[in-house]
Length: 232
Image 1 (cartoon, rainbow, N blue to C red):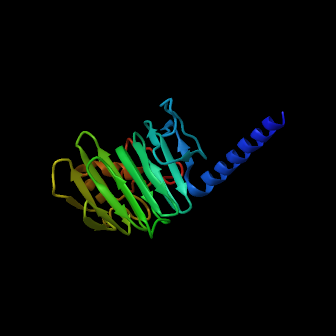
Image 2: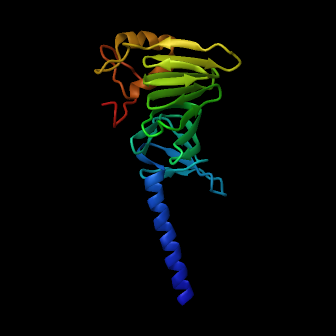
Image 3: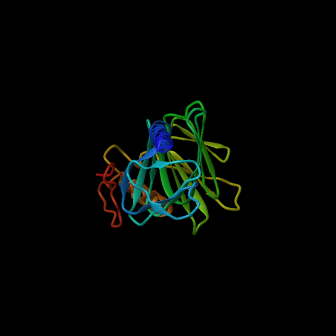
């Protein structure tokens, strides 16, 4: 009985320690809408399970969002916003070394980076790798086109060796060495997405993902799904 009690106390202490570690050293789900599932790296059953507010994402975990579903991952001042119909994997995560490497297999995600200035923060897709320090940017992979778009909201982003600044973006298509360069300056103001944004969206469809956080000004987007936290 005494050994069982000691064992219980030990397990309890370990679980408390892990909870503390998770809250301090890992990104957690701060906002979840709709159906979001996770495939945990350490789960030998290989079953997709529901991902909820306050759940922790660890290296090797993969998230999937359904139609109209979203999840925000928060670590201190760093934030990942995983958009609808997206498959997102966290490949590496080390807060002491300030290293984070993620993979957008399909769909789109937006990142605000504040806590990895001295380290390495990368987001890859099947056709590109974006390396950043202290910035905000979006990565969108369109499987049908086999093409990745990266747009820079703040700071600078290195996409496959080329540096892009705020208000610009890159398009990288599988099998093509040239990087498509796009300009987005003035398309979104503090009030929302302008008519010029609407025109640009006709040639760069991935921009529609921005409408979850930036409401149209002077025009309507029929299929817009406003983010309850950011897009009011």
